Length: 343
Image: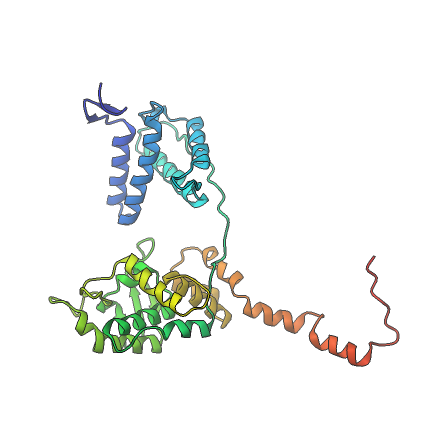
């Protein structure tokens, strides 16, 4: 016997955790999970397998509910190189993939019972979006790009599109010519989160900036061959599609340059669009459709951010209004008023 546990002379044990984890990821690929999901799932399973190998656990049949609880505690007490603990979301992700993996093992007759079936996931707090821009602040950010330069004109079109549509970063990067319907003023998001398509409206102003970018800037960025049908809409200075990190950097620089005392990038515009539309009277189900949320509960976080309407109702209906205070000051109150009983 040589190599890691679960390996015989360098050959993977077909009933070992490693071999079955590879088959599980391959099953996910055949089932059309997103590539990003495949990569993350494989990496998180690798963490668990290494932890098991350190304890001489090589096969799924050796994994018990008690062992999974030990792993859960390990994740809770684990500290990264900088001394920080794993976030609750990271702990939850590492345990969630185990629940899917062991469920798959049972369905495919590799296990008789699922040791992860009753494994409770950590409760993740529901945080509000940290930053949302006002209309005036958005306009200040939008005024940042230098419109005399092709890249500046492109950046203005990108910022306007993010603000108008609320697209995710990856969704904007992958937009192609054919996804933009100028006559209907819509954008087709192909295989958004969950690999689902959706149609999103784009406002007239954003569309006008995209049109200007296409006419005045994109011809200076494009590198032949380029397809007017399937070509990428927004290009980098090398004529290729933008990378996620570069787009975040570009948008973040304009936010910082506006000197608002706020930070954020692409998702900041997504949060802002949803919040301002709700404050403007949009139905939350329309916001859900625009954002591509599968569950309405995901969208409802914006009802807690959208404080404007609540403030209006509070000011109009709460009895302790400023007008009452002025009336009391001018008239001194009525003679038969009794002092409040605060006992």
